[in-house]
Length: 125
Image 1 (cartoon, rainbow, N blue to C red):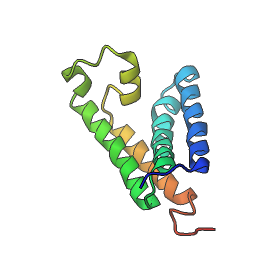
Image 2: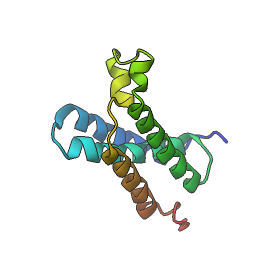
Image 3: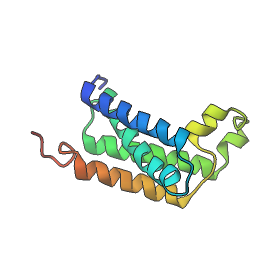
Image 4: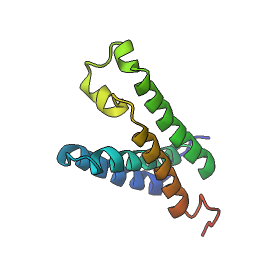
């Protein structure tokens, strides 16, 4: 079940670097909040693909499920409830406020995985 695949790991690292760049240098109302979440679920898909030997369909559903679950925790003010809101890195990674647009961005991100990943579409080359 566990493995290590280099190509998805490289894809994850590239997406991670883009995410860090967005977090550090972009402060707007579209790229950072929407495109960042769009890329986050794709990055999560690739990190899961790096280490788990599951079908891409299962990986995609797992990635978007994790994203939806984290958004649900934000809706419930989970970090405040367990006293973790004072740790900035946890707030950055897990998020601090619920937004339906985030759910939409995650959904579009997983659709993008299906559109652009040949293996997910069953077109293995």
